[in-house]
Image (cartoon, rainbow, N blue to C red; front, side, top):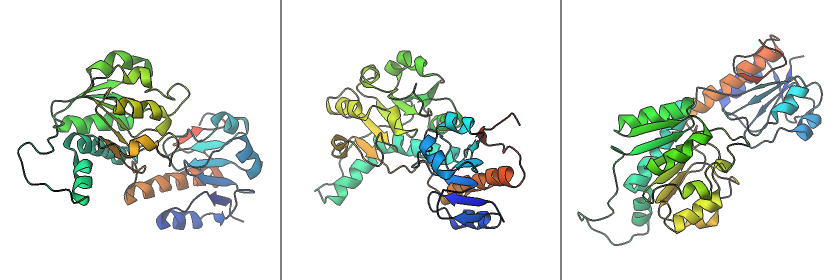
Length: 298
């Protein structure tokens, strides 16, 4: 019998077909040899106990693994994999999209037109700013952060990369845009809080395409309301999909529904990395190259 694999959610048909070629797809996680988990699934002791001791691999359909208790997986000798590299460009593009939407007031203008508010062309109407010449602080110097820096520089921005969270206090007062690209860990939870928001320029904006809890959302809403900072572009939320109510009515906020990796090619490529990890562990008894946890060194 082929190994049993459970999908926590529907995947692109191309990925499903690749999985069906080698595995039996089962509707329940209990009894599965491998699971493909989305970031909406919390993989902890309770989850792993429910799946059972036959489980060998957790293939996470994301680059971040904050939804997985990695220590619980280690104790059970499991392989945990993620989907690095293939979503770098797509996520960086969303970060740039949020920056440009904020600076050029595109989504604000879209709402204005849809309301059918009266307007006519004027040299002083809805003026924004260019990305060129802005100083962009990239918090998190990983693949996505570096690619975001490259794209921003192509627009003429100056970029500064902060590889460690404790580097940013001295850099925040100098930044026009703060773009967050760190994984969610205990150290980065509420990395951008009321204290750090107060360090920023009143003309500066925040962009978050990392994980929602990296930003204290209530503190962000307060900082936007009282003019501590000028704007925010969010693709992720602290209690996703819930959004802090105060943010919804703010014209200086751009909100996207977690679209960072949301291109078909990217999502298929992510899925194929999950397939590769499942094949390596369940069919070849090897450690996949995208493993973040494994029983022993490859």
